[in-house]
Length: 154
View (cartoon, rainbow, N blue to C red):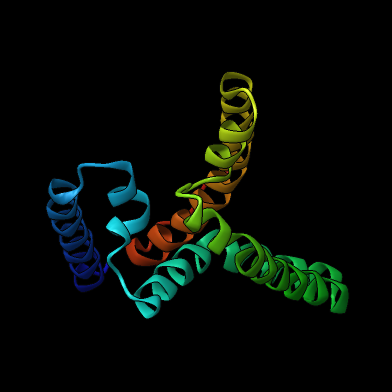
């Protein structure tokens, strides 16, 4: 094991936890949590969205897709980015002007809230589970690289 790499990783985790702790103390409402109290610039919001999208799941997923499908995988990766941009351009401002922060908020405002909340919660749990698996694979690769451990399959 490389002590320098593990120490750097531990420091990064500690700094992240400290920043998160102090940020959580300033957050009192849903708007402050989901939209930073509507007090950040477009550039800061762009960095936040980019940080969400540039995860281990995205990097590993698109890399694997391109590896397995070739040019078709590349087209799908570009299509996903373009679709995200279209959704952003078509819906983000309308949702902001309506005072809604999530698709569930918009749908529950227009339709009966209880079934909409149940459906969106179920969809979120399904999507997050798949996403979490890819994130855990990425973190396993990172930990294995940092620690020098090898995986033993039985």
